[in-house]
Image 1 (cartoon, rainbow, N blue to C red):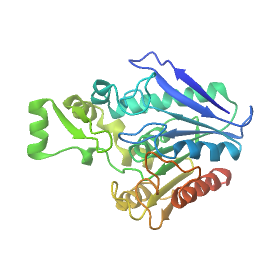
Image 2: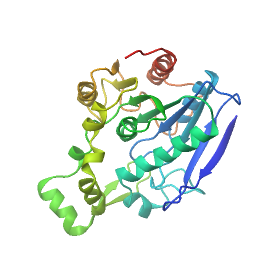
Image 3: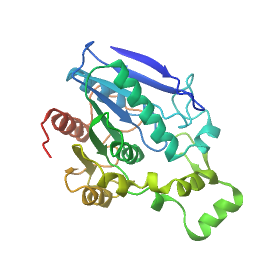
Image 4: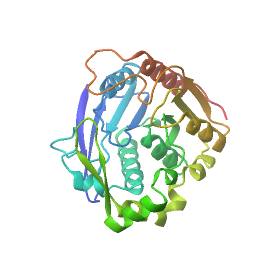
Length: 274
């Protein structure tokens, strides 16, 4: 059973979520965070939610409030102004709000999963939110700061106030306002993934494909170095999205993503004594 929830946070924009569960008393709540230029219904994510539901979990996936989607049009990016005004801090706040909602809605452990940029966000939150029982990152970035422009490109961004990135799928010019960088610098201590990972005291699983073209596999090894207690799983012969793409028209998961899901469920169900 899948239901849609609009979560009002009291901040600028509401959060659109869906919850997939086959039972009223799930054994755990799995919260999934999408990545950069992503959204909750991208590719095979809906099939992923079904797999977790069949294993007894309630699977919560949501659009970050400033991902560029709207409540009425959650797929693709009709609200480019919101996209341009997004920050890492807003995504951290969004995830904490979804965790708070889940904690009130269910009496069950909470596990958080993040893909790509979302993997960085769950790492930040796992180091501080005591309602989280385990954290899993899929193809996660290890450092937000290094992904910003530097030198002349950074100065050009500052001078113009915005730079645009072409979305290859939708052909939209997606804006990034300079305030994004300013917000990061102002809040850098709270948005440094290495610092957060070192403070994680709950079971932590890092999964990465060895042929990731978007986030180097080196990031997985760096994340593991920040938290030596973390488990690291390398998926062989697969890319950043583990063989998935958008649209995903098959009714089954690609092989690599199936392996990712199976390893994640096994990790969640195991004792993981630190």
